Amino acid sequence: EAGVAQSPRYKIIEKRQSVAFWCNPISGHATLYWYQQILGQGPKLLIQFQNNGVVDDSQLPKDRFSAERLKGVDSTLKIQPAKLEDSAVYLCASSFGTGSSSYEQYFGPGTRLTVT
Amino acid sequence: QQQVKQSPQSLIVQKGGISIINCAYENTAFDYFPWYQQFPGKGPALLIAIRPDVSEKKEGRFTISFNKSAKQFSLHIMDSQPGDSATYFCAASMESGTYKYIFGTGTRLKVLA
Image 1: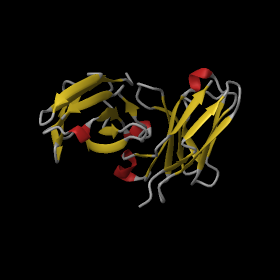
Image 2: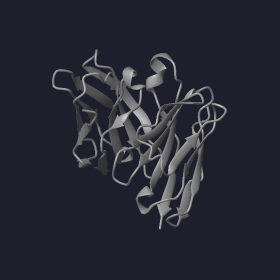
Image 3: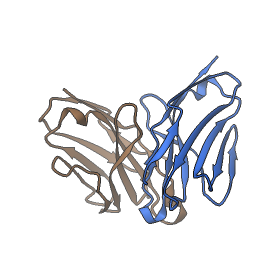
Image 4: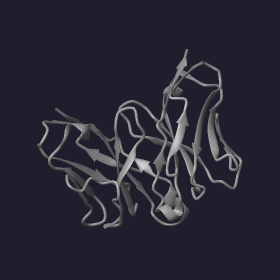
C-alpha cells in the first residue's frame, strides 16, 4: 500500500514570497490533516479535512495560510506572503475517517520550508 | 487543558538497556494515546497506541503503561538498540475532538552501541 505522498520535499524562499505544498493521502482515506512542525517541537495541527470539507482550521493563520481539498483526495497548502517564522516542516497525514480507524493517522515525509 | 507534557527532552541509553519516556495530560476526555517514532528527514511513524480502558499494551520490545488516575502514560523500550535512536512523540486524541492529535514536545533518544 502506497503511503502519504508530499511534494516538494524541500523549499527555500524569501520572506514575502508565496509557496504551495501538495499532498496525496493514502487511497481510501477520507480524513486529511496538515501539521506544522517547528524544529525541536511536536507537530501542531493547522487544518483537518473530512473528504472535501473543513473540520477544524482553528489554528490556521488565515491571513496568510490557505488550504483546499477540492475533490476530496489531493490537498494543497499555500502560504502567502511567507514570514521568517514559517520556517518549519509541513507534514500531511491521513486517516481512514470512520469508526475506530479514525484515530490512526499516517504521515507523509514532510516538506521542509526555509524562509530567508 | 489541551496540552500534553512530555519528558525527558533527551535520553541516552546503553545498548540493551531500557528507555523510558513519560507523558502527562490534563483533559480526561482524551481517549486514544499513540506514540510516534520519527527519524531525521522522515515523517512520524505510528509505533504503538493505547486506549484508557487498559493499563498496559505490549508490542515486541515496546510497551505502553497507562495510569488513568494519574493522567500519565509512558513508553518503555526494552533491550534498546542503536537502530531505536530517533525522536519519540506521544500524543492524545479524542473522538469528540474530531480525532485530531495533540502532540508532546518530543524526546530525542540516543542508544549507544
